[in-house]
Length: 110
Image 1 (cartoon, rainbow, N blue to C red):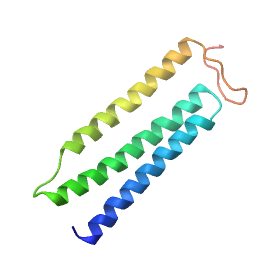
Image 2 (cartoon, rainbow, N blue to C red; image 1 turned 120 degrees about the vertical axis):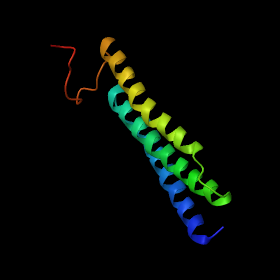
Image 3 (spheres, one colour; image 1 turned 180 degrees about the vertical axis):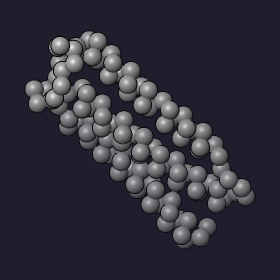
């Protein structure tokens, strides 16, 4: 395998891992449910996206032709992650989940 492909795959793996780590730190450190929901959804989407792109580049360089299985995984991830985050936030609003005092906006206390 050429060196430039190894460097490119390594770069995408490191960037994807960093986004996933930042999302995990956000889940641990942020104060309430709604802010905790934001960190992992962005981190997971971008982190897994970086790892999948690295996988697509690696396996496309190993066999003749493009490896398109990863595109289906990416499509599924980019469709389901925002929908699940939206459903979780709507459920939390219905349950009137307690907010951190510095969180702005309380749509259920109108």
